[in-house]
Amino acid sequence: MTEVTSFLPIELFLAFRNIFIIDQYRVHVEHYVRTAAHQWLFSEYNDPTLMLEFNTFEVQIADLYENIDFSEA
Image 1 (cartoon, rainbow, N blue to C red):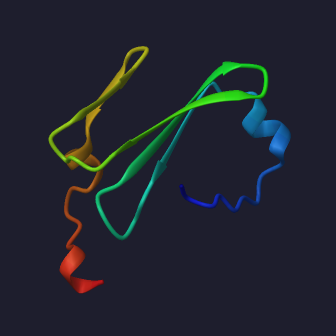
Image 2: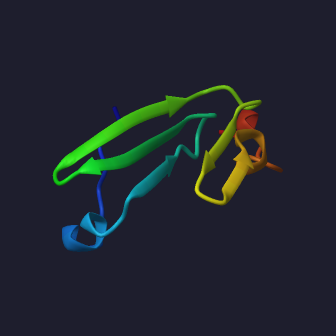
Image 3: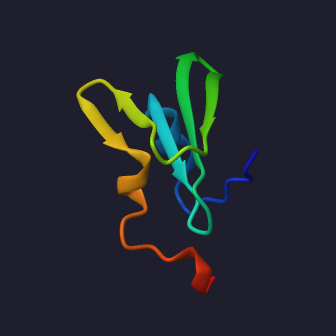
């Protein structure tokens, strides 16, 4: 699991229901969904062909990495 370092106050994150953490060095997305107070459901995705969906938002993971060349890292 990714260690999250933030410059934002924790209170701001507590207002969120969905949090996506997108890795900048490889195809890897972490999704946290608040299920109850102080409880989160964690999912992770490494397949660029998968669709991320919640509410009315939908995006293919490959689209998040459009024009990114990982060979230069």
